[in-house]
Amino acid sequence: MNKIFSAALLLSTVCAGPILAQTTTPPSPATPPTSTMAPAATTGMKGFVQDIEDLAVKNNEFRRVLYTAKHSQLVVMALKPKEEIGEEVHKLDQFFRVEEGTGEAVLNGVRTAIRAGFAVVVPAGTNHNIINTGNVPLKLYTLYSPPNHRDGVVHHTRGDAEADNEHFDGNTTE
Image (cartoon, rainbow, N blue to C red):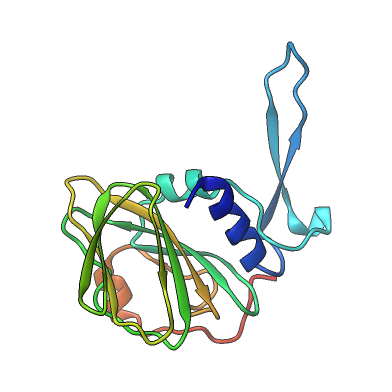
């Protein structure tokens, strides 16, 4: 899946209000592009519009919920070398995109090597796991539909995530 399709999927899936909206001033031939971040309240825009690849690559948390809408949720994750998400099954659909690193996606026992640029779609009811098989962090983002975690939650480590028995409580970002 190419980045344009991945971005289109992200934008079409996430439906309702940003934490921040990004605006860009068109560059003149002699001026480099500039970017400003404006709070959603000042732009009136709803939704999430940011550089997801950059956010995923810079993230060092096991899990960070970036945005929660009524029917979907955007989360960035970083798995340490040899770390895994852990086997799980959801009653919801989930999409992963790998931005850095190498690993394995395990869906109903079938192992598939994944690396930067790979997408994984996990239908509801599928036993799945993502494992970092490399020597550097595996950086990715995931979309849950519907939301799975409490809006804004940050788990620094997998241990923190396992100790916090949190779930989506119905509250969205906006």
